[in-house]
Image 1 (cartoon, rainbow, N blue to C red):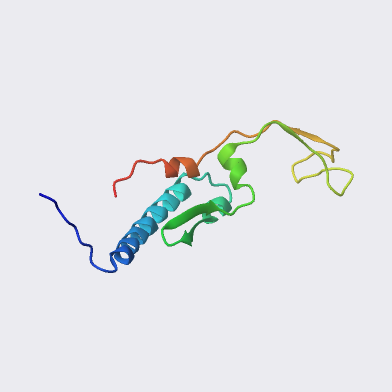
Image 2 (cartoon, helix red, strand yellow):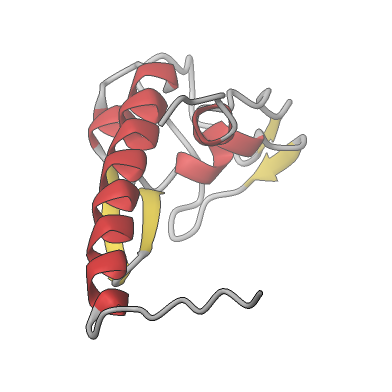
Length: 121
């Protein structure tokens, strides 16, 4: 005995609409968790996390702060030199310096933990 399944016309569009809705909810949940996991100093990183719709069923969660990747991944020790001036100075420095040997920063992941969090849909 053979079973024949006949799909109603337009079923693909209905399915795509349901998938798009589910992707919107999932992306919003991931972005909310990323904001919750993000370390807060000024709050700029947390407020820069956005969801971008890049296709009918594709979403991208992105942190727009310039330093977002450095927080997520950390940095190796590195040397900081002035770009246009002869020395570097910041408010807590005792005096201007020509070079800073930065020890690097530890990673503080917030996007990856949000992405890989177990969810019930």
